[in-house]
Length: 376
Length: 165
View 1 (cartoon, chains in turn purple, brown):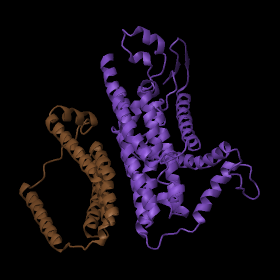
View 2 (cartoon, chains in turn green, purple; view 1 turned 120 degrees about the vertical axis):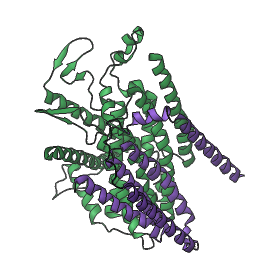
View 3 (cartoon, one colour; view 1 turned 45 degrees about the vertical axis):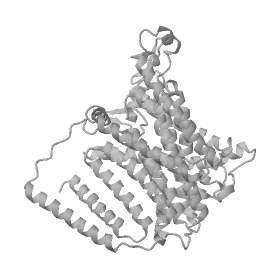
């Protein structure tokens, strides 16, 4: 009993620790990346006792100290309580959403089997969407409590955008749920351990020979869904090109214009935590989660014959490592977008969401259903 | 007292508190935020009753979508500026609450000892069983509800279009 609770607490701590730290690292990567793309040297001024060598670590220490020692200003005519509550509401859903994302298969210690996932809910993905839908409150309430017209405009833009893209995002994963037949993220990750050839019916011999060796990852079975999901996820995190809620050239800084110090840090960290969660979802739904192609529980089994057996611990470490690498890659991809695409106009954002992503997602559902019927 | 019972009383106390705040707070936005908190607590209650599906849907639909629209409307219209005329409604509400409370107490008295709670099966409230019953036993009400929603959407679009001209 005590050991079970301890294991769950340890897993929860580990995941929270990783998400928060990755969010911190991303803040540094964003600056270094923007410097790289704009052909300058960035984020190299933080030094501890004249030692500037380890840029990442210095910046990660300097940044929080800077934020936490700044003046925390609350607009005198704003709502003090809600102004303080809003950053918490922005950060909380982003941090807890990762709980259902599996970061590995099972770990066997003696006769104890540990599922490498914080919470194994049978509704998995719905929980992530529920937490994502709560993310709107941080923006709306923060914007209103600031008693500033620019804030309110940013809040209105942000909430309209997030609600619109939630629809497209939810519909884009329906195809994945149909293919793997479950809402549980751990089961979806396990389903991607199969090969495409095992899913195709016997009579499709040509297809089997051509693509049968591919792992049954979401990206191969649902490529359109991935593009839709990726676009919607970027819109949900409110980053360029969907950063109209902040739009500094029109509405100063949007919903967080009246925030400074630690509270601004919370909005900032919440945004990066959302990026990490989005990357975790992309990995789990479309890129096999913790799967490495051909790596089963006892080692590698290649479709062209041959096997390379590995001890259990090595397999688990490889899988957790693969998951971490994939998540890091998708975080980097989202950061890279920021300096690659210009910001949309508001009507363009709405048109893209409702008139392009939504119909395409519906089409994807219909085509997936027809394909599943054809294969039976 | 078992751990789950303690959890229930804690949640129930918080729920009653936040529900009272919905009614009693002056600032309307605060009331709306308290209502969000109440809906969130109800969702956690569902979780403790082995019904994660209902709990998550509660958050997704009520806390995540409907209440956001409520907040939207409240922030734009700012009804705090309007003259509050709550006296009559408050009396009506108190009467209704008393009647409901009386009915609940009478019901509990009449039943005597509550029947033993039945343990839920493993598949109880799972997405599979919910989908099964929605598309077999309750397919007609389900479809009627979707037609109703469609009518509401079309109506909203028509009204919005007319406004523009």
